[in-house]
Image (tube, rainbow, N blue to C red; front, side, top):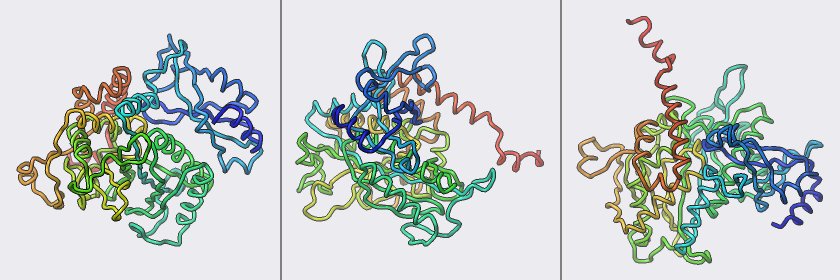
Length: 444
């Protein structure tokens, strides 16, 4: 979109404010709100802000940074139309005062990997599936909505069914192509899926979608959370990511081979092999919280085994079946990511790992179609099947010694992430939980 098109749309839709949005390294959404009267100046001269106040950004001595608006992301926030303060949002890239892109900007990190794959002659498409919980607010307590026994695809008549539709309408008005919405496996757990697109557009959508779903839940006095494992004993929330490489014109799926195993090309298998090799370092980005690893346990549909297959939902990477004649749908689904991940960094490391496999012509191991959850440790070891990182600190240590993933993120990003996540781990391991008090206080 051009400046004149954005200004014209803002005027036509009676926009009063603009939320200029970006994320910190941890994936937390940030925004500066400006009056629409300042929009033209913001487009021409950018929006300056104090980077020292943002996690993983500049130090106090070098705090000045600016946001460069990506006009293609302009969209009106539909629920704001009910008030006088009609608001639109625009996602921005972060720059240094000298005009260079900020090396710690997550969106910029993904853009660097996209340039790399573009230079190789490919387009990187993703299709993330975000699961989330809706909770009732009962004073200081949160309880899952609905209070039912609903499970996967169950058609319920509770309020959550209508709220999912309301959320979908809002996403549609924001230019997001919703494909399906349904109840998930756990009580109070839901999923809304949107159509795949290029990785940058999809990462933007993930950020917008989280904002939209949380905002609409609040209107119903509910809390929407993308926390990976909010309730012990039931399934956690994942963010399975479907991935494919296309030709630059978008006409040819480079992962498709009519004669290949599961219709996969040799390029696709090398891409898969690269992700299997680098997965433990990738876990630090794809599963970035202490809580993430309480989801990654056997028995809750969370893939912990480093293997791939087609029918196998216990494997790390699954090759979904496709309808005959729809070769563009051939893709690889990475199943360990969770929605607490920063989508820009997540897609960047997925692509970097896959391209490493392609460049080095890695050979994928034999696919596994048995239920790996039923394997003994000895059986898994005999088949050469390892597991993902066991906890956040394990993942951080793997990240530090993986040059491919570190290079994709950049030294600045790695340094800041290791610092923040080590502090998170230290805080967790030194905390005394209610579980410990219940188990040990009166016994010892």
